[in-house]
Length: 99
Image (cartoon, rainbow, N blue to C red):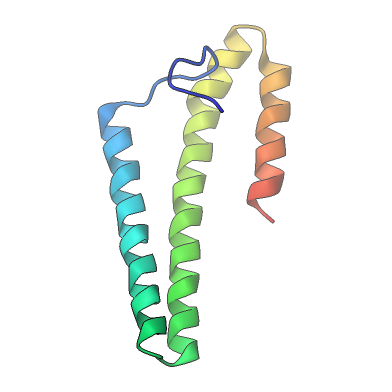
């Protein structure tokens, strides 16, 4: 697993980190809400609608990370001569992300 000291990574700003954490906490709250809906035996369509909202919120977080990676880490990789490897890595994750 990569960590913040990986030479391929461009460290995120504190603002970027806080934005991602804020979004993920919102998703966490939505998931807890879905759990409560199940426990309360709520209408299936209402639960499914909330599940779709969580999936969309996670996709937005993912796309935000993909965009940042392309604009920072990819540029660093190209500048350091590792662009081809970085493009392959990105395309592999994009393929998994869009499934």
